[in-house]
Amino acid sequence: MEATQNYLSQKKPFFRSAIVIAIISSVLTIGIYFLYPTEFYPSYLVAFVFWASIMLGGLFLTLLHHISNATWSVVLRRIFESIAMTAPLMAVLFLPVVLGIHNLYSWSHTETIAAEPLLQEKAGYLNIPFFIIRSALYFLLWSAMAWILYRTSLKQDQQYQASQVKILRTVSAPGIIVFALTITFAAFDWLMSLDPHWYSTIFGLYVFAGSFLSVLAFVILTGLFLRKNNLLADVITVEHYHDLAKFLFSFTIFWGYMAFSQYFLIWYANIPEETIFFRHRWEGSWKYISLLLVFGQFLIPFLALMTRAGKRNFTFLKIISVWILVMHFFDLYWIIIPNFKAYEFYLSWIDLVIFLAVGGIFLVYFLYIYFKKALVPVNDPKLTESIKMINR
Image 1: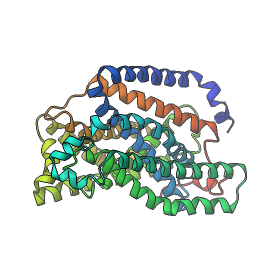
Image 2: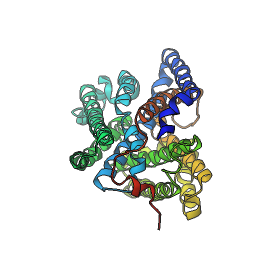
Image 3: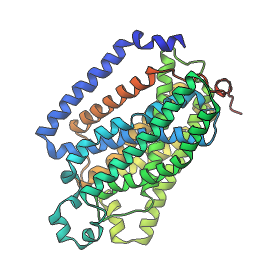
Image 4: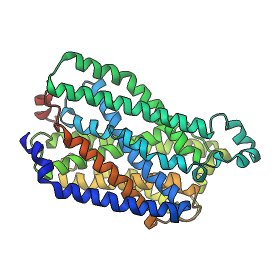
């Protein structure tokens, strides 16, 4: 553990570079806000939801670890917890979305509601005060769960007590239900209500599937980053990457199942209020992004992760993890941007700068939280067993 204690002092240039990138891109983002407000808000929503989905994935992994009493993931638990602890940061980064409600959501305009009977029926739910209250409640619940689990885990590092395990499980058991409800309603509020005429009861699961895929890729890249810097190389072993890759493979199938189920049921029913979502994403060059997701988000990772050798090859895992994160970005871009840029798809420098700004802030904060304490739960009684875990 001495290497972990000295890491920050030895790697100051890395953190300095990350901070500089975050600052420069954030300054440019502020400039974009004033010069290109129309383009700013949709691009910001894509970037925000991308990084928020990773935060939510980290919280889910933490909850899942405790309620399943897992052993294999003990060495990864502090990574999960540190990702989840970015929830308060994401609450702050949500403020531009609140400021841009009128630019993002048509239901926020009284004249639009007055002209459309359907929106009048939904006005009890889709209104600005209730939208803000719901979002604040989501972040409050996510932050509270992350903080309780993280603080209890740190107390365990100092002195292990059986009562701490009870607290972790007591919070995680109902927490997984709270998580399921809040991520579903957040998906409805932040994404589905961009087109208030469209609805899908499976949309929350679709967003969750993408969130879980992205956090698995993020955890793999974090572990490989540590290995490259001679940290935890004998603690997070190839066996743990193998397990993470198995999760990645299975949830690639789950995402494909959710995506196809949503499309198939809407196609089969052929109701205009439902088909409008896919019709907009089959017009112009958006058709190619729709096809890209079919092959890039599902088929390519599915075929690539089938073999045992692929799941245990670090270079391959790095490539496929980056690929999955890129596809997750395009997935969210495909959900959000057609509501503002009909027919034609194009990525602008504004999209990339804002993504780097939000991502830079997220990564700096995550690394600060993670390296502030021990990189693994040192007093967990299952730690040794986790380190020695072997896939059968």
